[in-house]
Amino acid sequence: MDSSKQPKKTYQKYFTKEHDLLRSALRDWVKKEILPNIEEWEEAGEFPRELYEKAGELGFLGIGFPEDVGGASGDVFDAIILNEELMRSGSGGLAAGLGSLGIALPPIIHKGTPEQKERFAKPVIAGKRIAALGVTEPGGGSDVANIRTTAVRDGDHYIVNGSKTFITSGVRADQLTCAVRTGGEGAHGISFLVIESDTPGYSVGKKLKKTGWWASDTAEIFLDDCRVPAENLIGEENMGFYTIMENFQMERLQLCVMANMTAQMALGEAMKYVKERKAFGKSLSGFQVTRHKLADMATLVEASREFTYRIAAKIDAGENQVKEISMAKNFACSISDKVTYDAVQLFGGYGYMRGYLVERLYRDNRILSIGGGTTEIMKEIISKLM
Image (cartoon, rainbow, N blue to C red):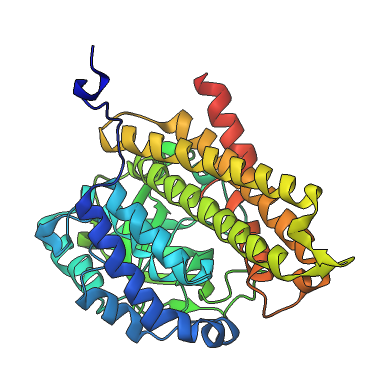
C-alpha cells in the first residue's frame, strides 16, 4: 500500500492557533512595556500601579475569567500562556504581583453573588483595583484548617480580629479575600470575607524584604476590630475551607508553570553563556561534560513541562487532579531547583553576581516549593490519595 496515501497521523496539541495569537500579543507587550524596566522595578521592590490598569485595558487581566465579570473567558491554557509570558520578564515577582487576582478572585467568581462580582471582581479585572488573597497567618502557613483570625457576627457586620502575612500585593491591595474563623475549631469553621483596605482597623505593616520575588510587594496585614459588612461574606458561612482547597488546585498548577519557566530560562541563559565563555583555549560548550550537563537539564525541563500540560488538560476537562497536581508541583520544583543550581554552576562566579539573570532566577526559584503548599504538604496529599 502506498504510504503517501495513508491518512496523516495526528497527536493531541495543547495550544491552538488562537492560543498562539494570544501568546504573540502578550510577548510583544512584555517586551515593550516590562523588559526595559524590570531591573529598575526589581530594585524598587515593586512595579508601577499603572501597569495593572494597562493590563486591564488590554484585557490581559481578564484571561481565564468569565465574560459576565468583564473577563476574556478562555480555557486553562490561556491562563498558562499569560503566566508563561509574564515569566519571560525574568521576574517571578512581577508575574506573582500582577497575577495576584488569579488567587484572590476565584472564590468571588465561583461562590459570590452577582452584586459581589460587580463590586469586587469587575474593577479588579479592569485594572482599577488590586486584589490580594489573605490565608497565611504568622502562626502557620500550610495548616489552613487552623486559621486563627476571627470574625464574630454583630448584627449586619462581622467584627474581624487577627493578622495575615506573606500576602502578595498586600501593601497596595484595595481588597483582601480573607479567610476567617466564623465557627468552631478545624476546617468546618472557616469562611471567606472580602475586606476593603479602607476599613477602620485594617492596617498594613512595612513591606517585607524577601530573598527573591523582589518586584512583588509582600506584606503583613493587621485586622483590629474591623467592622466588615455581612454582605461581604463569600458563599456559605463555615464553608470556606472547601473553597480554599478548590483554589489551591489552580494555584499549584500556576506554580508548576512558574517553576518550568524558571528552569527553561535558566537553561536558555546557560546555553548562551557556554558558547561565549572561553576556558583552556576553547568555549565551555566544547567540553563533553558541559554538553552532557545541558542535555540532562533540557531533558528534565521537557519532562516536567509535558507532565504539567497533561494535568492541565485533565483539569480543563473537569477531572479531579488533586493528587496529580501535587505530584507535578513537587516534580516541577525539584527540576527547577536542579536546573537553576546547575545554570549558576556553569556561570561560575558570574552566576553569583547581581545583574545576571541566572542569579535572580536562582533566588526567585526558592519560594516555589514553599508557596501554595510546601513540598512536605504535597507529599502528605499524595500519600493519602494513592
